[in-house]
Length: 212
Image 1 (tube, rainbow, N blue to C red):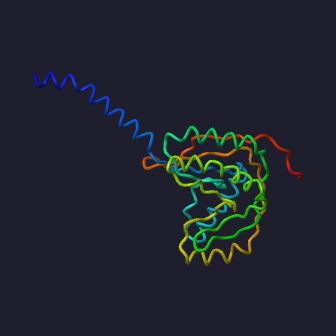
Image 2 (cartoon, rainbow, N blue to C red; image 1 turned 30 degrees about the vertical axis):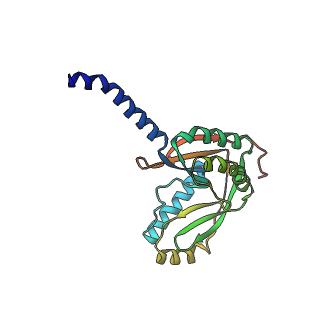
Image 3 (spheres, rainbow, N blue to C red; image 1 turned 90 degrees about the horizontal axis):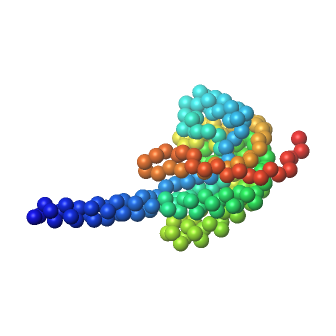
C-alpha cells in the first residue's frame, strides 16, 4: 500500500523538482561583455605585437585574446537575457557604424599596456544610451551596467608590476597608427560553467565613411 502511495505522489514530486530547477536556471547569474572586435587586418597586426611582447618580456595573459574594445559589461540573470538583447539591439540601430583610429600606446599602472583610441565620441554616445538599462537592472536586483567612457585595446594585461614598469618605458616611445571600421558589436557571455562565448551580434547601420 505504501508503494502504491509513493507511486501515486511521485509524479507530483518530480514536477515540483523540475519546476524548481527551471526557476533556478532562470535566476542563474552570468557575466556579459559588449565589445567591438578589431578587423581581420588589424587583428593580425595587434597579434604580432602581442607575440613580440611575450617574446621580449616573457609575460602576456592577453596573448590568445582576440583584439577588441570593450563598450560595456554587466551581470544579469538568465531570464533577463532576451529583454536586454532586444534593448541593446534597439540602441545599436540608432548608432551609425564608425571608424576607430588607434594612436600609440599607453598604460594602466601597474598591469596593462594598451592602444589608445583617438576618437572616443561614438563610444561615449553608446555608453550614454546604454544607461537607460540601469532601471531594468535595478528592478531585477542586479548591479548597474559598467560603461567604458575611455575606450582602449589591450596589448598586454595582468602584468607583474616589475614587467609593466620595464615595458611602459619602451612602449611610451613607440608609435602605432591604424584604423578600422566598427559596423557591429558582439555580446559575449560566461558563467560558472562556461568561458566567454558569443551569444549575439548587433549590426550598426551604415553611416558616412570618414575621409581617407
